[in-house]
Amino acid sequence: MNIYTGNLAYSVSDADLRDAFEAYGKVSSATVIMDRATGQSKGFGFVEMANNSEADTAIKALNGRDLNGRSMKVNQAEPRKEGGGGGGRRF
Figure 1: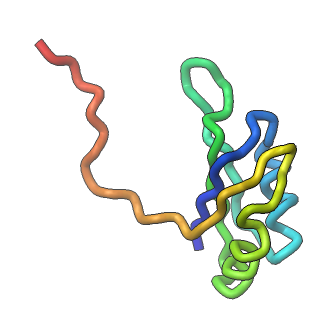
Figure 2: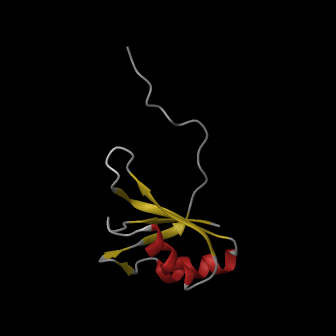
């Protein structure tokens, strides 16, 4: 299951995120999303857990929990929408 984690402190690393979720089961990946231009955290990330039961337990346990001074928002990630993008030049 892909899990969205929001309201992360800018100091949270991939390892911090992984550590928080590994208390509830096996984590396949944990990634804090970084701004390409500045290299600074955007304040959210994604965690992938193979076992849905463990993922559900982690979501319930970690939603609202403090991590590095901020209360995390944790829920099941929504599938990416097709298209999107944008960013093209307009004349």
